[in-house]
Length: 306
Ligand SMILES: NCc1[nH]cc(CCC(=O)O)c1CC(=O)O
Image (tube, rainbow, N blue to C red; front, side):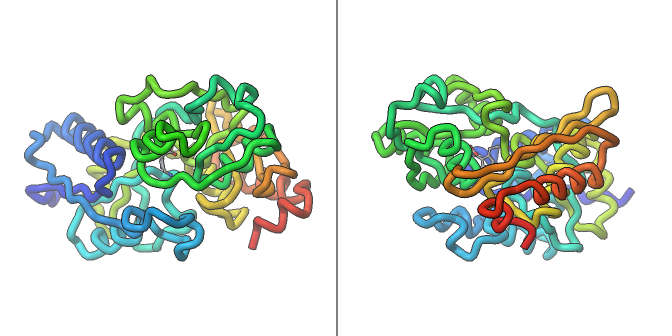
C-alpha cells in the first residue's frame, strides 16, 4: 500500500476536539504499530469556533464545524478529519466519506446545577444552545426558561459558576473525555433521549483516497457505525440537522437494531415519540421517521421534512 510517511489528522482546536484527535492518533498507532511521530495533528479553525455570541442557527446555519476541515481535506492538507459526529451535517459532500467511528462513549446528557430535572427550582433558567435540550426540558418543566449558552465545555461551566443560569446540560461523552466526569449527574435516556450521533467520534477521508480509507477503517467500530448511520438516516429522512429539536438513539442487541426517537415543538408544548425494532440499517430508521411524521402534531411536523 502507498502510505505517506506522515499521516496528518485534521481537527478543530477546542480542548475536546484535541482530545478526540489524540484518541484517533492513539488508535491508529496501536492498530498499525506506528510510533507517535508518524502522525501530525493539524489544527484548523472553523466558523463555529470564531463566532461565539449568536445562536448557531442564526449565522448561516450549516457546516459551521466542517467547512474549513472539508476544504483542508479536499485540498490535500490533511489525510483525515476528526469530528464529533453530532455536529456533522446530515448531508455530506460526495467527495468525502465517513470511513470509521470510534467505539461510542456514554450517550447520555449530564445535568449540572441540580440533581434531576424534577429538582430544578420553579422558574429555573437553563443555559443551553441546543434546541433539542431546550425543548425536552420545557416539555418536562414548562416553568423553566432557557438562555443561550455557547462556547466550549469549560466556558459553559464558567458561565454556570458565574450564575448566568441555574443549570446546564452537557454530553457525558465530552465531560468524560475532558476528565470532568465528576461534573453533574447523568440523566437516563428514558428521561432525556440524546441527540443523534451523541458520544460518537467520526473520521472522514477523501472518498477517492483508498490508502487513507483503509488505514482509518481498521480502527472503526462496526456497531457504532451502524447505529450512528441509522440515526443520521433518520435525520436525513426528516430533513433535519443538529439544530432541529430531534432526539434519537439506535442500539443493537443480538443482531437486532432498536431505534427510539422523539420530535418536539421548539417550546416543548408538543412532541411525538416512537420506537422500532428490526434489521439494522437505514431503511429501519426511515420507517421510524415516516411513522413519526405521520403521527406528529402540526406544530411539530411543520419543523421537519422540508
Ligand atoms: N455541540 C457541541 C458538542 N458536540 C459534541 C459534544 C460532546 C461530545 C459528543 O457528544 O460526542 C458537544 C458538547 C456537548 O454537547 O456537551
